Image (cartoon, rainbow, N blue to C red; front, top):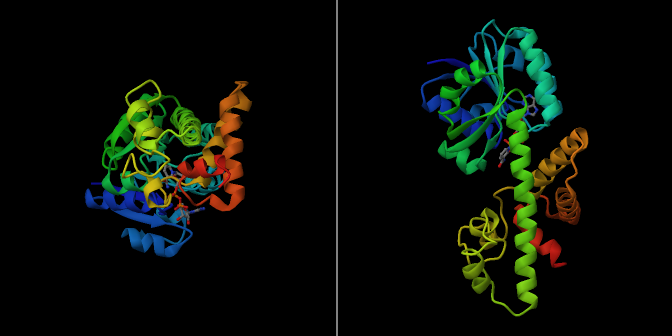
Length: 289
Ligand code: NAD
């Protein structure tokens, strides 16, 4: 069993850390909010640099790129030789590649390993990890990630885990708008939502946004629409990921017109005060409700 430093124990990091403790590891934790460390059951440290002292592995689960950059600037000089670093935050590809290069400069193995599966997956230990890094870093990280998740995929070199995450979530964001438009048009045409679902979920319009997160109440009883759009996955987070996709597309010279349109719609939704609702409530924005 290993000594693991865990930095960022919020909605996702908290339950992920608890699963590592359950697996028998010793956790040294640091979070800007001290009570988050206590709630996760980790040993509280005064700083990120103190947390990594004596740790064989470091896991970070932070809000965005600037937080990862500043924490890595602090911890890299404090890590012992041979330490493995896994950043599980969802951040921009450029930052992921920049911190990986810095870690390499210190002779440390690092993976970017963003997740899919939300807080439910974090609690159940069923997350999907999309991993970027060298073959050696992936091989070292795999057993640890498997204690927090079910599906661990090596997406390629440094930053490729973030690239996979951003592309996947852009597809999700766009497909939810498409499904919401379909159900909105059906209502105006006098077509019952359940009938559209019965037909479309077995036809070529079928997708995850329809069959798991259906944006109207009824057809999928577990979808957020049945609990007044309590998340799930907030519109704030979806907007963050759509912006990451747009920034990556700008940098890479790839046109993503549907991604751009979907981003503008989620921005409208958030500006309308619905940022903390599930992103499937985009249907209300489309319907002008
Ligand atoms: P969160 O805000 O609940 O947790 C982030 C934690 O980091 C907070 O506890 C905060 O206090 C701490 N923190 C911030 N700056 C810090 C610093 N400098 N040093 C130490 N701690 C610091 O967010 P979350 O929902 O846990 O999300 C974390 C990451 O996971 C984000 O990148 C998010 O996009 C991604 N993600 C979230 C979900 C989800 O459903 N919540 C799903 C997939 C991916």
